[in-house]
Length: 243
Image (cartoon, rainbow, N blue to C red; front, side, top):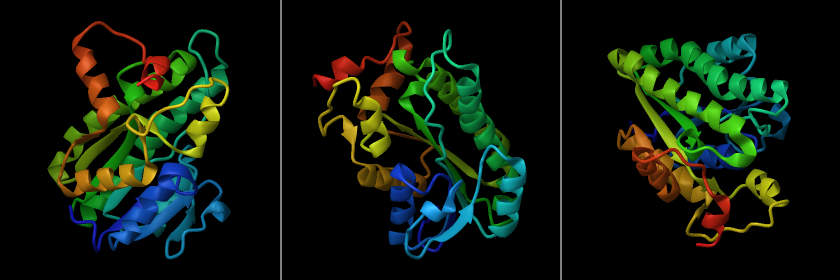
């Protein structure tokens, strides 16, 4: 689809990668609804700011009624919780599943009729290479992202009939403040070759949507997908840091 002249909605637009996506969409000539649980933190000139909690169906329904001209839905909202599956806090694990899987699903269910009314449009789900390779420090996130990948593939089939493109951006490491904060205790640093610049990744993602790609990969995520042909393995952050 063509971004110029489109009307997009971005979840989690108040910071990090969501902010970069919003700015790049506007640079390309799109109208953008920038949504967040705390809309007062969204300070992007020209964006139409809406309050949205993707784990609250009433909040989703209210936004879908307001933003009824959307033809590009970007599911970027994420949970920053960390937990192991065996010993982690059950509530934190539930928060990850509620956000990444059910939050994404409920957004798509609410906006699928809107997209159909507006000609089909497109959906971009922001995933992670943890969908394909677990991370020892956050195995619950890997499980949630794996579920989100399966969801993406499922709704792609179900929405094909209404002409909706469903794409997945499967990202490796994104150089946001959130990731840097998470890495502080590890002492690991990553080169520019493996750490995505968020603005560049936003350009890659939207280029992929415009080209009709169903999976948009960076270098690390391409490696992770190729490795699925072999035995299951964890993502080795230390090995990546030494590249």
